[in-house]
Length: 143
Image (tube, rainbow, N blue to C red):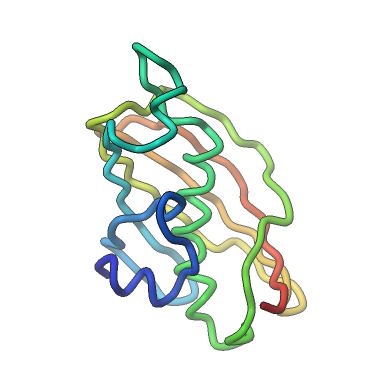
């Protein structure tokens, strides 16, 4: 999926659109997305001057957006639904993500409850090295 396809599925826009491409998609199971990290992103002005590091919360948000690709295409979820975080567990950051890195995020659906809640396992890597991982919980709300 290219950026145009992603924007049809997700409501996020600049500066909060954090997925550039989906390179693998298994319906109702898994998605793998790419985020090309560039120095001209606004958060690098202050995080940190002289040593730009992508904030961990944005890495988690990028993983969640990849997970949103899986969830938005599941037939049992409402078309007008908006997926929001319901919880984040067991998140660990293993290496910094810096400008020039390509973040490869794999997000796998673990469970769905009452067609309103989902739990996913996210993993973000750079050059084959684990950068972050954790469990992401979602809830569907009406737009």
